[in-house]
Length: 219
Image (cartoon, rainbow, N blue to C red; front, side, top):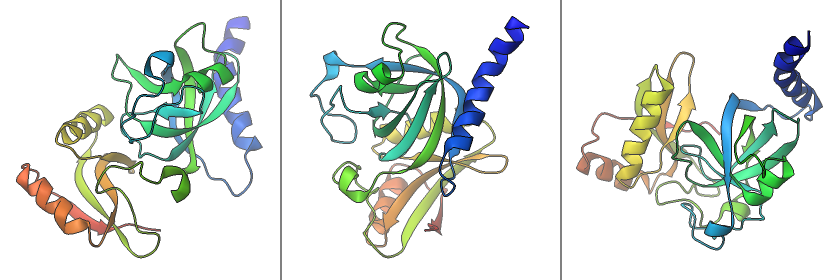
């Protein structure tokens, strides 16, 4: 019975956290169980991939593909502690780790001693423009109003293949993200304004990425 209870604990934590959310919040589960690590003093004050200065005490995180400004709730499955973080960096690029938390976020969920923890990750929103101003790379900033566009570059049955393709695009200077669909995972560049769209398309074609689909972004 004790072993069964331990197996049920992570599931119960997730269900409890879902019930405790405000009624108007519709969370998106990123990972029910994933490996998290953290980084701190050795990177404090250095520039993150978003262009911000890394503050080890701020509640931020690094993720390979989620757009900068994504707000995530991370739950330590071993103790039930939760923290809300904002994605402002890329990584981790070690093993099968899903997310790199700041030192401050790791402290909140009690994983400083272990260094790595099993966590659940849910998207709960996006930061406001004021919080992410200047944080996105070219081609990702959207105008305060007006239509924005998505360039879809691939659709994969395997999330691993989608991640690998995203990393290839990132190596060419683009900032893609993943868009889960019914049976596939799409690789997209989102949040493009009307004026940005032609230049990004030209850059893609110049880099050899000619097979893409342009569609309106739903707001």
